[in-house]
Length: 141
Image (cartoon, rainbow, N blue to C red; front, side, top):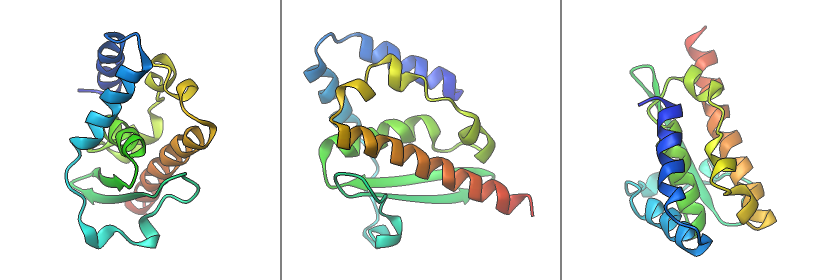
């Protein structure tokens, strides 16, 4: 599936709920479905600075694609990073860099987060894109 198709699927799934408490439950469920994070990656270097909670993000470059693993110490943050990984993990650096994350606004996520969580969302996206930029630069050497 393309990143656009994945985002459209997310929009469709979120549209089944009118109440944001139900949507938060869905986000929490996404976080619970994350692959367990290897404790050896829970280092200060992998923490996304500026998030309200601690969010760890690791990226590996395998067969031309960036594979993300992540964890967080708060259930909403863990769900948000899981949502982003559903869209952007296992993609080429170019795909990650060029993906416009339109689903975030369409599902109303950004508007329904506290200011500090919304800032964390922006920082998560920035870190994911920075990894992609770094891997793209490395492969173009």
